[in-house]
Image 1 (cartoon, one colour):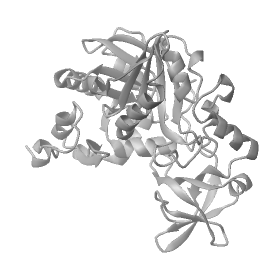
Image 2 (cartoon, rainbow, N blue to C red; image 1 turned 135 degrees about the vertical axis):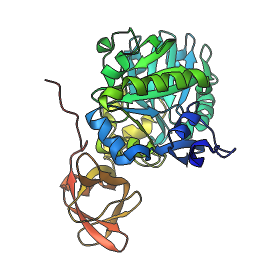
Image 3 (cartoon, rainbow, N blue to C red; image 1 turned 60 degrees about the horizontal axis):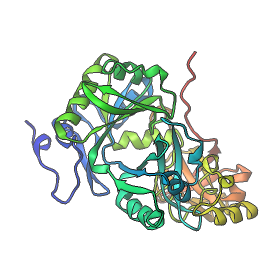
Length: 385
């Protein structure tokens, strides 16, 4: 067996229950915020582009067990969730999910999250992997004094696997008696998957495609059992295991934000173009007053989509210039778009530039490369006939 398939992750890195499975598949592993994670699977003609295209045209499988899960229980669980999030969790029904965010008093981001309503007094927040400990400490600080709201970090008890792509439903359906067609987008249910009972099955993802995320007990034999069963079930559709590289290019094509890039503690909700999920009229919550002031004055900056007109790849952090070659902003995320076959980027620029729709320059090493503003998302999955 090849050395890279058997070597252990550095002792200082956290490992998901599927770490050994990734190494058996000869994945290229990287340090991702303290986690030993697969960035791509180059064996057998694979790699980032093949993985990206599999998700767009067939089905791909992702280990997202590094994500965090924080649960709120008790008669005041909803009040606690409402205080710390920007969306209106009171609108959720049992089994429904909403995109939301934890905000600072300045209306900038602590993290973006998914809120699941398990029952009337029970909510599950899924947070980003690299911010889980920070988020949990922040949440405890904000709602620790609210009686009747018990907050627990259950991240270590879940393994999470994402099945994404136009053949995702057919793949997962082979392994469960639950009728997946009845699960609407951003809803979930409980069912048995690959013989594992009480698995949470949600119709969510981070790729712009249809798909599901399953939450299973984190013990290694169980997690590997489901992972391997999904790879076998999707074999006839051309399933590929997918790493962080494809996960990033897929979400960028789909115009989805990434913490530390399009959202951070220096970027507010209006600048990030995430006002669709901002509910200022729901009542008081952390960041509301500051965002009301931004709304009244108008945001100073806005996030825009760019497509490179000239040859060059806009990378994260590259300077954005006006056509007069004056620095006006920076690329937050940029890369080739494998499915669209062009080079794209998201960038934060002055609101006046965003509103004008004018072309800009991106400083790519020593070159100033022209780019045009385009609507986001760059890619939308085709509607079913």
